[in-house]
Length: 266
Image (cartoon, rainbow, N blue to C red):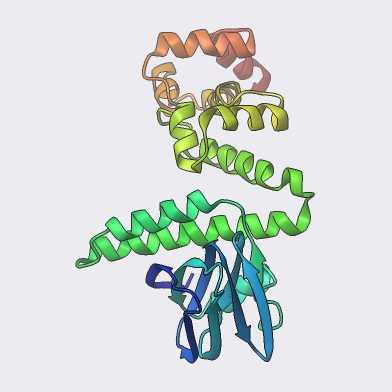
């Protein structure tokens, strides 16, 4: 995808501080952390406050001004690229509708902190910034799409649980703990466990176990793989522990399951 990170920042505005009318070359996602202000774009003026954000469109003129009594604090992430328009169409942000709402300020701050700590002086640093931008955009679009498709009380829950499941599906062969899973998603581990159980009927640990064993069942059909090979492939360094967990889920040992599958296939 052709989207490139440009820069980021955060500003604690003075009362009445304004910028513009001015021309911006890049797209910018603006998150309002505190206070109030106005954003004027495309012949419309929007009164905005904490928990809202707005999009600055590339190659366009806009104006923004902090409230005199309760000036806003906002942050921004600037980017450019040929595929930005496709992304914006997907989440229905247009010059006639550049405003959005969000609720995860701690996540925005976490991205800001991580980007600020990065050294962009070499290729690896620039690649890390690019990777972080994609993570931010993915999470931002997920939340906006969920906001439009589901009732408010279920928006964040569904996104968090789906991210947890996707992470398990991709990394099941690695060591995964509820703490590492929660850290990846950037929410509290107890809260994640509660949401996961409410959504799937299983704890994250139970879901991971069942997913690993299902993958093991698929691998056991391959005669070129030993039980140890299968064990390592699904995240168990100890074949004895793998056999114990396999029997707990399937009701038979990996060897017995393999023999049974061979008889069925013959």
